[in-house]
Image (cartoon, rainbow, N blue to C red; front, side, top):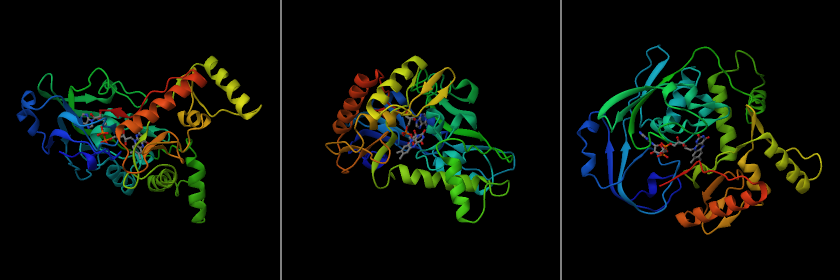
Amino acid sequence: MDLSSRNTFGMKVHCRLFVEITEESDLPELDFDSLPQPVFVMGGGSNLLFTGDFPGTVLHVAIDSFPAADGSRKLRLGAGVVFDDFCAWASAEDLWGPENLSLIPGEVGASAVQNIGAYGVEAKDIIETVHAWDRQERRFVDIPAADCGYGYRTSRFKTEWKGRFIITAVTFRLSRTPRPKLDYGGVRKALEARLAAFGTEISDDSLTPRAIRGTIIGIRRQKLPDPDEIGSAGSFFKNPVISKEHFEKIVATARQDNGPGYEVPHYEVGDEIKVPAAWMIEQCGFKGERLGGAQVYPQQPLVLVNATGRAVPEDVLALRDRIIRKIERKYGITLHCEVETV
Ligand SMILES: Cc1cc2nc3c(=O)[nH]c(=O)nc-3n(C[C@H](O)[C@H](O)[C@H](O)COP(=O)(O)OP(=O)(O)OC[C@H]3O[C@@H](n4cnc5c(N)ncnc54)[C@H](O)[C@@H]3O)c2cc1C
């Protein structure tokens, strides 16, 4: 089966068998051992880089149940629901929770694997329970978010539980009480500008999930490639978190390069410092860099794109390695990939 249209990087790869399930009850029936191995569970394919043809089975959970709101603020969505459809629905219903996560590609099931995050909000902030088929115990389980080991773009589903659970649904907790998160990545400024265009300013009346969703969509459209137009898997690297001593060394290097008084962008995370990988990539001169069909996206250097539409996995991997090596040499930091290679 051709997977070209099922991975947002647009890699032209095949898998031996593609299985799609549309009902929870399909899972106990499925004889995994009889399928071509290995079995890989896939969502919308927006965080993956296939490095070649996949020799086994790709399983997609296409359960797209989206119940009508019952006023309980809790919503159980099928794993195959498009995550942004959920964001759009919540905003339209005036429910707070996922608005800052608007326009992140992919499906509900993967959101609970990845702990997707953007603009100061992570999926873990609104996930109540993850419902899954446990391949090991051969039974359905309900896993409370507190047991999922959520961290920055990670969870137990990506580490010690890798391959064990097939997520069939996720229950989210929403709120009628305003919970705006504006102090990250220029959201407040962009919202103010958006409201000013309508002759208003931030107030209890103007601050709605819908207004924030619209603002986030505007910011993302400026910075990120639209997967329908340019292939990518979003941020290719994670932002590294380093010690304060290490950060001081980076500041010294940056001031040698850019002059005294230069400010290195960073966020404090407890006792440590998060440095934007995009900044390092840009400082190393990679903005817009091409290798074969792959490119460092000029508007957001954290994203590697399939610039020609004909990039092969080797182009992306070679560009990735070139970036990692140079940043290691210059800053003593090894970047880790957010995108999963399959
Ligand atoms: C343009 C662009 C922008 C992006 N922006 C962001 C962003 O702002 N923030 C962010 O966090 N991410 C971002 N991403 C990355 C991506 O959208 C997320 O990681 C998303 O959650 C992936 O969802 P998916 O359904 O495509 O999962 P896939 O890429 O298909 O799979 C991701 C992982 O989840 C597992 N998985 C998927 N479904 C299931 C299931 N039902 N059961 C068990 N395991 C499963 C897969 O095995 C894999 O390990 C972006 C991607 C693109 C292309």
